[in-house]
Image 1 (cartoon, helix red, strand yellow):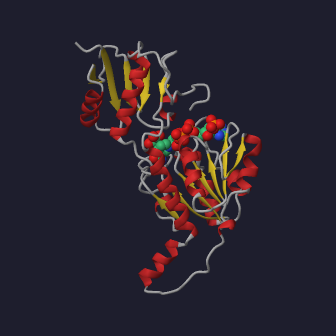
Image 2 (image 1 turned 180 degrees about the vertical axis):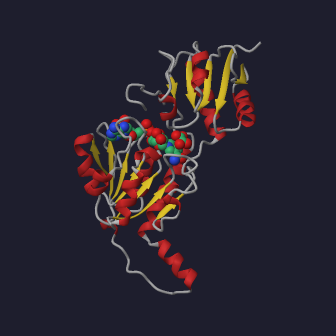
Image 3 (image 1 turned 45 degrees about the vertical axis):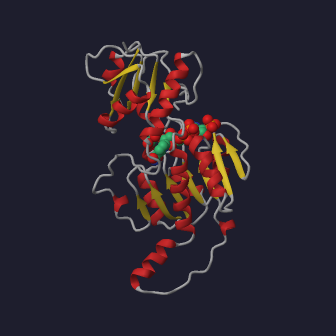
Length: 309
Ligand code: NDP
Ligand code: OXD
């Protein structure tokens, strides 16, 4: 007789794979797909659930989010006193480090230019750039941002970071809080956004903040589309203030077919793929955390509803 009941719902991930994987990792539990009217479970494992699910599951011991970002959950009316637990790396930070290092190096080494030369059959060198002129600033020094900062530093770029609370990370010049945002941006030529989406960070990459970045700046947004004011980014690119952008996340996903980002010559678009939720790592982490909670221990990745992340 199962002693635990886990209810599962995902707007994006395949329940036919996730439910058996959770069931195999937590054999003492009964794992089932949430549907309206289902009995209240002990734990919910969710991605972008409907409000109705949370309203009906009032007795949960915890809600597990199968992603790092909890902005979709935070928009809902969450049951009072129920902890929300996010994915805590689970194989994402190495993917994010790969993606961001690739985008930084592709821009710095002008690989798009060489690709165009190749297509035209041109053999022509570009003058080597000085990496001291390309400081990389990471907005957000959490689980993903810190890993990315350390990875970028391995290539000897000057690295800056910005967070809410003070940090000390070897090889990273750290800034914190709203009072130091402008100094951070002015000290960065390539800006990488790895902030959670909260009321404080919504639209943070707006005209006034983009204007503070060094001329010829480059933006890499791998956090959430709503961090960027689309029209302000396009204006900064078209005025020549920014040299280009790599964007993995968008206000509307999939990015609408008529959105100007698709065809802008200096924007690279990828389909929210910089750090994917990996099923086996994520399931193993959730199983470990459920076991810890069941035996009264604390777990990492607890979301602070007041901060919104
Ligand atoms: P964390 O919560 O571990 O880190 C968030 C960082 O942002 C922390 O350093 C935090 O500061 C800082 N921060 C938050 N609010 C502010 C603020 N108002 N001012 C300054 N700094 C702030 O998150 P992760 O690193 O795990 O993930 C970051 C985001 O990446 C996720 O929320 C998600 O949206 C996105 N993501 C995107 C993916 C993709 O595929 N594109 C995949 C996974 C995640 P402090 O350390 O002081 O708390
Ligand atoms: C996440 C994401 O937040 O995939 O984990 O964007």
